Amino acid sequence: MRRFNQFFTLLLVPLDYAMVVLTFVGAYWLRLNWQFVPIIYILPFDDYLRLVIELAPIWLVAFFGFGLYRFRGFRNPWELIGKIIIATSVALAVFVIGLFLAKTSFFSRLIIGYFWIFSVVFVLLGRAIVNYFRQWLQYAGTGVERVVLIADGKIAEDIARQIHASRPSQKLVITLTGVDLTVLADYHPDRVIIGHELAGDQMLRLIRWCEDNDVALQYVPSLTGLYTSHITVDTLAGYPIIELSPTPLSGWGRIIKRLFDIVVTLIGMMVALPVMLIVAIAVKLNSRGPIIYAQTRVGELGKPFTFYKFRSMYSELSPGLGGEKADQMLEQLRQRNEADGPLFKLADDPRVTRVGKFIRKTSLDELPQLFNVLLGQMSLVGPRPALPNEVAQYSDVAKRRLLVKPGLTGPWQVSGRSDISFDEYVGLDTYYIEHWSLFLDIKILLSTVGAVLTRKGSY
Image 1 (tube, rainbow, N blue to C red):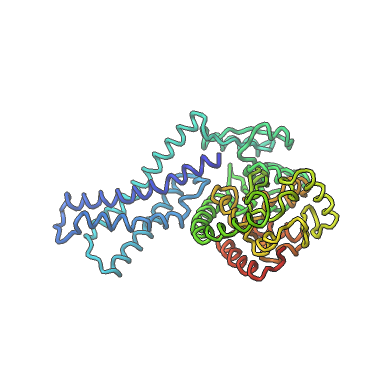
Image 2 (cartoon, helix red, strand yellow; image 1 turned 45 degrees about the vertical axis):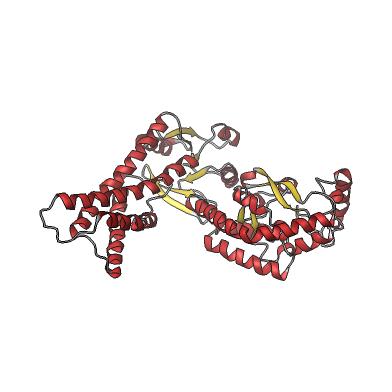
């Protein structure tokens, strides 16, 4: 359901762009063919169209700024119309001011007037077409949101009636009077709404179940406490309703982070590829075995993926490569483990080769994970990917690390790296998840360079 909503929201971006350009073309045509005011000068159509195509993104920025691309939609058409009018007016004002400052020979004021009047109609028409197609798919059974309402009495009746009355084809409502996670899982909900008081431990289990299963959670705020500072307040059937969001990395945050990862990774690879070639040769010449070490790690929402890095250990002593001998040595070394919790760290690990020690200290062994980033399995910044046996030992708090994609670097790498305790490690990752921003990612990436150069806590 979330991908269904994201697809149609993203579809609005090129559609709005096309509608803005089309409206400008229509305004130009009207000015030429409806001359109740004589034309003194008008920009040639080719130059006019080129200018419009270049400056039309101003409207997209304005629409984004005024919330016209939010994934949750709008409560009523009047809210949408109001936002379109305001955003269009602001964008048009910026457009005209820019032309004035650039001293561009432009067209008459009538074109501006025509555009302002018809742009709202054209943008609404485009969105109506998209909405009609979306509803048609939902009538056919695709993209229908499954809502589980945990409530009883008047609240349950009011909320269910309101949902059915507003969008009968877009939502399937199942009403339950109590919380049974096994029963809840059988319905495969996209959204859970709580309409009555739950016990603290019940609420906590439900919140964590929704997080683990990527399910939106809303509740009427008569409940005790709030689970996160990231909330959205709305009304439904006259009741105030709060939606919990465990991380800003949803909706546009997720898309922006992904685009950032792709752009920065592609740029970084131009520098990294020659270095990776040198490291690969050094690894191969130093000891027998494969150059790349592939291992199963746990990714976003607990999904396993194949994780890559340059091999830094002797192949006959490396778990996953060296067989029984390597596994026996690992069990012996666990008694000397220098990390707490489920992590395993050892500064003087006898399995590490000479080249391996260098590429570990300089973090060059991590460079192949740039391919994991491009494949969408990892992000440049995030919690480090854990081993399945580590995740099996996680507490409920530690499992919050799995809410987002694992990262090539993360907050703990720039805060002591291997030197910090597991609780601090989880605390830093939790803070990152709850307070993500693009600025924070950039800050961590820049700080990682300093941590690598100083080799602080690295082994």
